[in-house]
Length: 50
Image (cartoon, rainbow, N blue to C red; front, side, top):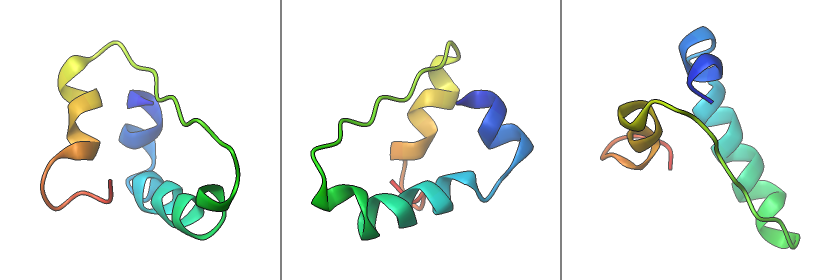
């Protein structure tokens, strides 16, 4: 996850869009894995897609 966000800033928005439009209708468990705690907390901060 940290490498994807660093390489492609639009990744979070694209993931949120896919989640909102498709994945919420399916029995999906989204697990984001990363070793950098600060990076993994960013998607849940104010102003971020998630």
